[in-house]
Length: 122
Image (cartoon, rainbow, N blue to C red; front, side, top):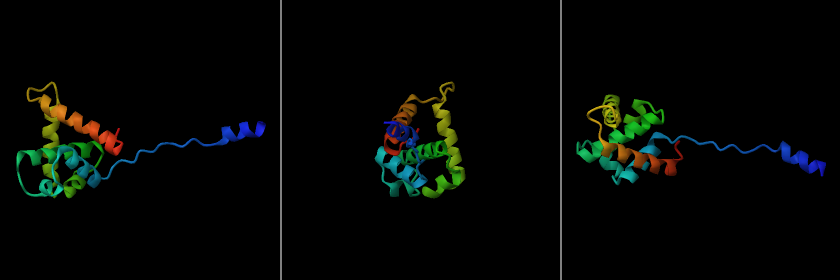
């Protein structure tokens, strides 16, 4: 009986380690959630819906601590483009500003919830 008690207390508990996604995996997941093809988003097209996907990817990429160059490398953009879009969308999400957009906030919250289940993000 004493040996069973000792064995139970000496076992190590398994720790759950959440591995952050790589930039490519994050990009593919966002494209799937938003219903756009990866090739169209990477192309040089300036359509509004494609620019929105790129900007949201940049925003989530920065939340995952990826560099601007890593994010831009995945979608064939310069790091300055990523910096611009991340700042713009952070302004859209700031409720204290006159340019706050509730529709953008709701969409980003929806994508964040979908990414949490898909990629185990915090």
